[in-house]
Image (tube, rainbow, N blue to C red; front, top):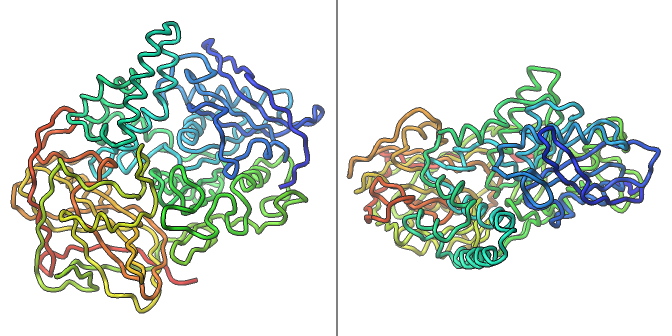
Length: 599
């Protein structure tokens, strides 16, 4: 990436909206008054001058490459006026902001949007209004879509850890500051209450509150109004519909989709890419999308996790392609067309990064082999492997003798979340965590293959089918896929959950789809449950073993099933459930893995 320009930084640049609200931005732009440049805009609720991961997107160096970079506070947050209501104003405000940016005196008139998580959602919402000047979206770990498949709910269970942590850790502090700015004494009391609750989230005790409504007395107005009530909602409702709306239709824009195998919004990234890809095949107006999938979580782009490192997997050095910041700059230079760097991606002029390879349309990191593979488009698996649960913890290529295992699930002693695609406050970190503490519990059963004779690349969707019964009228089943290395380390790769009362809505591939109502269990009656573990890309090497965990909780990632049919939002009554998992020809419990041939 050539750093051709000195950079000017302007603070508190105002965007007046039609309703009189003023939004404020920090603008990085080349110090070249006679030239016009494309604009790259991001819109955030987290504070526009919050330190941006420079390897992901460095506004100073991207501006030095010949772009105007605008970082804007959304309505009601930090420097911008108005009241913040999550997502509600991002379509209209975003569209106005894009058109304002396109008309800046130093703008070429073409605008791209960038950013991750909420910043990604705000892109899609603005795009739905089709603002003049908007030409490209580069959304990372984007929140928009898949409300019932991990964003808000999963298999009928509520995404407790991420939602409470987002509301308290990411939004509430600034909301408290604004709400009580005119009453210093009250502000100090509210800040002390925030700090007290923050300590409880850090040590995990806040997540253990029953009923969850009891958190209201300790929480901010924002948490009381928007987050805690949502714990009592059902999937498939109006909240889910509103969450899904931004990415429910393709857009006639260039799109770059960036995601991680351990991201809480992995299905969103894949769904956005596939939505645009299918549309591009039907309609020449829709450009073919681009995709980057790395060994990343929602907030960790280093490729390094406790006990596990993925060589070449850092956002600071995406294989031979440079860092994500320079990848952004080269991609925008190509797709915005009339700006600097029209030579396209992978053909840098002189600059600090030096030459880099041309970026494929789909770039995917394969764990296990620890390498990037490039594709013209993301492939589908070219095969599938079914592994059947068996006697004595075996995991077999064919269904074996009939059998069963039993365990007790106590909602007051849930299995702790340990890595995975999570994002919650406290000591548990997302990613490929070592599972021995989990597997030592009496309420977790494991099934393991013999060591593999040859490498096996697991790629794409992972689903599980369980034949099981419970003594309760409702309960959960959680399934986790692990890689066991020759030294005995069991590392989690993918996981999923089904809430038993929503099993009909999760039939087929294990993904919740609205329609079938909740249906309680008949205690002791064997039912078939489908669990979707999302997708992964991992080459199990010769000598590795494949392991499957089965249990009934993963807390605080997902809210606990109380086993009574009541919700944890407004109930503290629990019962211990006796769970029975069956296998064999009559009850072929199994995991189904997509596989991809070796290159």
